[in-house]
Length: 205
Image (spheres, helix red, strand yellow):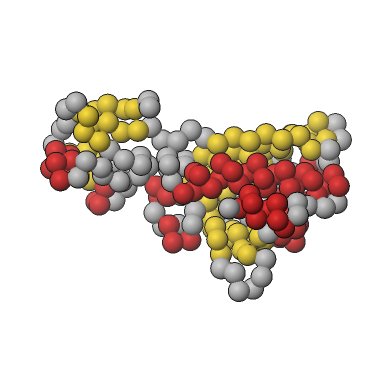
């Protein structure tokens, strides 16, 4: 695993906030792993502190036989997202506004939330992304960019998920989740239907 090697000094600061400032030698003597993101762990190896590098961006590209306006509408309309994502993406899609990833039934809580950071319809959308209980922890907040490029009557869609914590539940979830979501979106636009519930449950599992 590629890593950043640092000599052991009196203080090493990782992330934000006083809780992420540690007395390196003392902390590592008491506990070989210190979990202060954006790095998933810090280890004492061969007399040096070794910090695993942040996770690489997750990038997924797909080509869709639909216009950029159609694809944009699928991404930003809550009723459309419910059809292929089993969740509603709810926001007014203005910079600075909150957005929420809400279950398709009223009793379901908000699964993911964030802020709209950039909007350029129908070409680019950038949002922050976090579990609600981690939304105020900077190291737990990642970003998702949707880039739409017209190819004549068709569209190239690129989803970029950056700032993921290595080996986290979020990283594991989006690695399988994004390909399934955008494939379902493409299937809906092309064939007017989505994956069967049984197929979707197997992906979610």
